[in-house]
Length: 313
Image 1 (tube, rainbow, N blue to C red):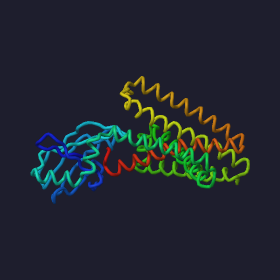
Image 2: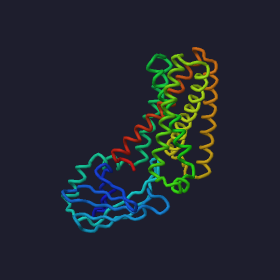
Image 3: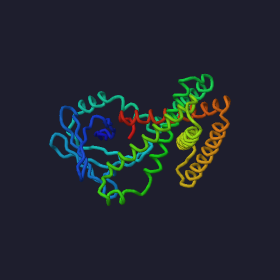
């Protein structure tokens, strides 16, 4: 959400200042701006509830313009809205900009630069965790690798089941979309926790042969997802840094299959290392899982931080 000023500039408002409630037909959000209440009503979309198609706004019981200014990618599509006609003086607008100087400063950098920073920090985290897992094969490395594999299987379950055409099937059985999302989220978390426990027991050699096979399968799946997530993230955001475009659907399709092929190779390599179960093979497993896990976890944590702070939408 942003305020358009008479000087053709924009003052951004951070998402967390809005207190939102949902009804069957709309989202109602409120925020305090310069001691007046800003009310924003977003009507739910007919095709998808979280894709509002109408925005209405009031400031101090006075109607103001609220218009859709397009979509952003970071990494999900989100609609940006711009408010015009707010009865605010120049001094009040300057006070708002000073109050939310953080988001307005970072917004001037642009979301692409922010995503480059996130990508650089995530890659650095991957290198650090990978080297640490290689040089210090102790309890900390084993614990982090277990968590990384669990995070990978969580992402895999969520991404696979979340993309199924379930909306009509779910609503026809009396479940709401939010309830189904909670079920998916709970199931993905359960699989992730099982992966963490089995991988940890495997690395500490506390499993029987059947348990070791289960741990190996889950770890390989987690490794595939971690590698694929890291490569997709890199392929999407690194080329624009060198003025290369990936907006073409053909280029995006090719990069998706390239990243999937590389992830498959690393997953097969991981399976071989786990099957050999030697000191060096387990060291390779810890190093690779630590590297890709570091990239994936760091990228997700930093993205969640920026989204939560309202610096990206």
